[in-house]
Image 1: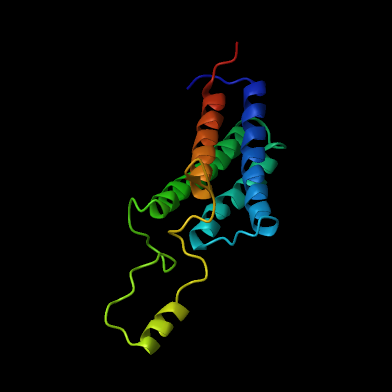
Image 2 (image 1 turned 60 degrees about the vertical axis):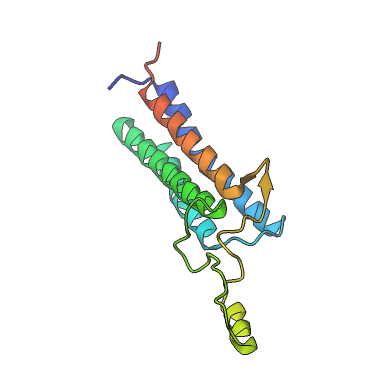
Length: 164
């Protein structure tokens, strides 16, 4: 493993703190200001970011190897959120079936009117396989995947980069 300088560790630390914080602000902003309602898988993506923020904040005050270890842990947490984002985006784009109750399934055939009403009434309010918002065909889960996995890779690169 190559030696890293304090500037690279500091940059990685700040990125490990600010990236998940910014993504959480975006998620909460889209919910509270934009009116989007998160599904179950959306919440799953937030949990690793909730953990990464205090870990990276703690790393700012940690000495030497402990700081590096905490930044690595924060980067791994950010990457986990990105991996969940990949899984969620795949469900939204129907690349694979969902694995939660919030994934729509086709209504069974030959139901009575009462059975159809009952079927609709038991659907979750927000479906995991229907993106509520997209930009250029990329959903919020897709953006989380791109930014989280890309950010985790940059953090790792900064930690491994030799200072000159």
